[in-house]
Amino acid sequence: MDLIQSFSVDHTRIVPGIFLSRVDTLGEFKVTTYDIRLKKPNREPVIDVAAMHSLEHIIATYLRNDKTWKDEVIYWGPMGCLTGFYLILKGNRNPKELYDLILNAFKSVEECAIVPGQTEENCGHYLMHNLNMAKWYAKEFKEYLEKNKDNEDIYEYPKAERLVIEEGKHFFDS
Image (cartoon, rainbow, N blue to C red; front, side, top):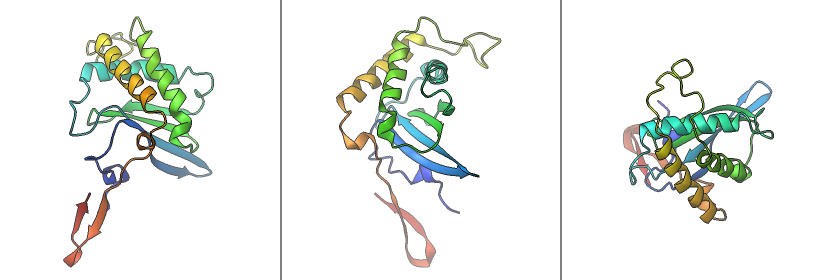
């Protein structure tokens, strides 16, 4: 069985950043998935679940209301490993082109007084939010992005090679 593309990333060397995860062609349209990584996998504590939920609500609302990008946004949601988010956009752009959008999205969290859609009618688990922790994570990532804007490592993640050895067995060599 082929390993899916996101599992071919060397998670022992990835740093927080804005990465192109995959490009899909749907008929005549291109759709691109970006990995917005806030934490070093397997090296840092993951994002608190309630804070992750709040970040999902706030940033999804921001992205879908941004005058320049709102018609390009297909999806914003958390990674199962709780180290970041996936952003799916129409088209195919270099991750550097998303820098200002992502930076401003995380800046917007600091300005929130309430989590959008945090009601029983609007949310599947409306009690599982933590706005204060969401603000803390957003500030941490915003400051990281500002310090590393010109660091190529935050835009291109390392790949793990899938080597085939005797008898067709596969293993990874980082």
